[in-house]
Image (cartoon, rainbow, N blue to C red; front, side, top):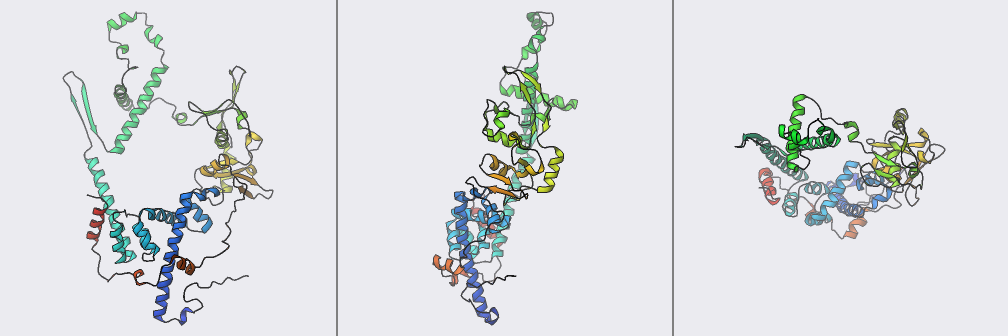
Length: 465
C-alpha cells in the first residue's frame, strides 16, 4: 500500500509543530490563515471568470457549482456559495480588495456579500474589521430578519385591506369593487380567464342556425322577447366578457359543477410528427406542436424518447385511414426496472434523481429496442444535451456507459487529479501581499456590539425607510 506525505508550504516548513513555542505557533497559524485567504480570493476570481465564460458547459454539467462539485470535490452547497460570493465581489470593489489583501477572511466576506450594496460595503467592512466573523454573521442575520419583518408587514397590510363592496347604480346595475392581496387577486384572475375560455368554447361549438330555427322568424322572435341574440357578446369588449365569466364562475360554484373541459388533455403538449422525421437524418413535412410552430427533428426525437405515442395512418390525400391506440414508448414495468437500476441521471457529475427521462441509446425510430440494455436515465438538462446538444452515449459489452462530448472527447466518470499542485506561498508571493502585516488581525477590543444601531445604519445605507 502506498502512503502519501504532504510537505508544509508555510514558513515553518520542515518544523515539527510540537517544537514551536506558543508565540511561534500562533504566528504560524495566523500567517497561514491569511495566506489561505489570499489564495481563496484568487480561487474566487478564477471561479468568477470560469462562470462568466461558461467554460463549464463543455462538460455538459448544469452549472459552475456542479462543475466544482464534480471536478474539485467541493460540496454542492459550498460550491454554490463560492460562485455566489465570486460574482457578488464584482460589484463590491472595497470588499474584493480587502479579501485580496488578506485583511478580510472568507467567512466575513461570505456573510457581507449576502446583504451588501455598493453604498453599504464600506460600513460593513468597518464592522468586520472591528469585530469577529460571529459579529458579522449576527448583524447579517438580524438585518435579514428585520428585512423579512418589513416585507411581512407590507403583506399583512395588504391582507388587512382586502375588501369587497357593491352598490346599485341609478340604472339598476350593480357595481362591485374588490381589493385583494396580489396572490389572491392572481387566483381570481386565473379563474376568470378559465371561465372566458370555457364560454368561448361553448359558443364556438354551438350551431347558430339551429338556435334560430324555432319555427318563427328572427324578427318575430326579437319582437316577442329580448332573446339571447340581443345580448350576443361575440363582439363585446374584453371587459364585458370578463364580467360574464365572473357570473359563470358564480353559477358553477352555486351548482357545484366543474367547468366542462378535458383537463387531463388540456395541459398536455401534443406533437405531430412524421415517422420519417424521427429516423436518423430523416426528413418529412410534419414536425410541429399542435396549434403551434415547427420544432427541430432532434427535439421531436427527444420528446418521443419517453412519451405517449398515437400512430395515425393517412391516405395519399391526407385522409385518416386508421388511428392506433395510445401507448407508452416505454412500458411501466420497464420504466420501474430502469428507475431501480439507474437511481437517477447517469450523466457524469450529475446527481439529479428527480424529473428524469428514459433515453434510448439507439433511438427506437432507428430500430433500437425498448430494453433495459438500450435505455438509460437522464435528467431533462442532460437528455437535451444527448439530443440537441451533440453529446452522445454508448454502452460497452460489459454494460459500462461511455459519454462523449460533441468533439468526441470521453467524459470521465471521476475527474483526474491535477498534474501539479500550486503552493500557497507561491500564490501569496505572486500577489505581492504581506500576509504578516498587522491589518489582517481583528481590531475587536472585546466590547459588545450595539446590534440595533448597526442594523439601523445598514438599513439606512441600503435604502430602507
